[in-house]
Image (cartoon, rainbow, N blue to C red; front, side, top):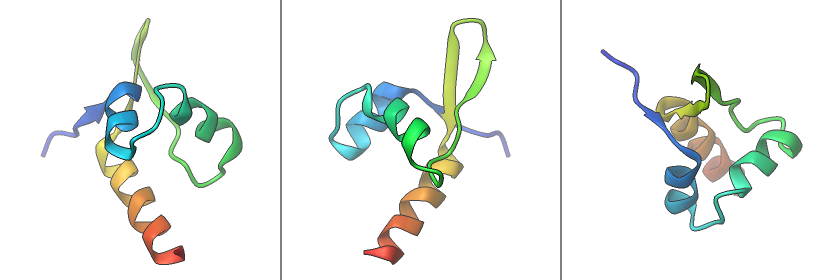
Length: 61
């Protein structure tokens, strides 16, 4: 099955945060997934990684 990739704007919309917040999470949260560079100027996150991170956050709460 093909992997789905999402942008910083899509992550921001998913969690109700500013578009710069996922980049801050990358720098300051060891558990937040690293983005994947697909081509020059195109960086995305694997949706499966974001979903796994989201589930791990729900277990902690």
